[in-house]
Length: 292
Image (cartoon, rainbow, N blue to C red; front, side, top):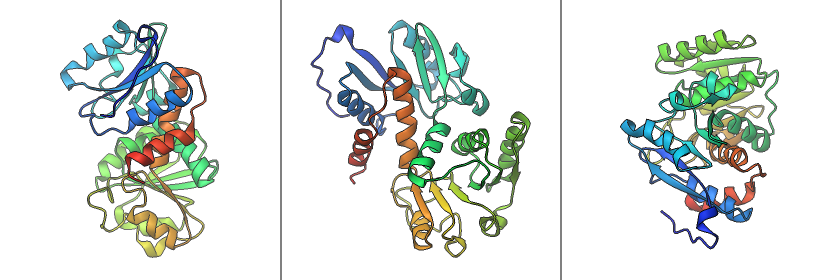
């Protein structure tokens, strides 16, 4: 963990942090502490390794210790929910919380993953969701946040494919049943390539291509990628995955998952502080951790 030098009054410091298990490899402390410093806020972000059996006590500790808020990561995103006072619309729909705000002793749970994805898509992919079509590869927790947020933002249609077709169908049914405007359909993995020509956006929400297994076959065949696509890979290590390399070669717009990590963190920062997040500084902190 990086050294943090506190020069301000410790009694007045605003504490935030990360609840997860494990947490030692997280980039969030570097990102948030650099943001606090840039904005001259007397705040500190710490990683807290919380074992699953201690989640209830940890969440209660937010109030007891008067923490300003925390991020929540694997494996606690669902487990914290029963101990919160309120959920945002996205958190309730997605069924997972990645940010908790302590607002005058009331704990409010948010899910900034989907909103971070959309913000990254707009800022880095120059992509407006409304009326478009998307293909999502994967049906796990990350895909769930992405699909719900795309639907809330007015996407026309979403195709989902996962090796576990039952998991994909469960996600599709859940979204369709809970959001009136949703049009989410499941396709088999054999139909992924032929579906690419029907969509404007392709998202890899699987770990395929993640370090250290970087030289693998991408989730979509390179030959079906084209210049009218935006290809988004939620994997951010490496920043340029095998899928994104293929997308660039095809003339498509390629967007790394580093943006989702950045913007979900930026939204959490803004929830806790009420201050605009210093995006450039936070990005630089992430890039430094990745050795870029």
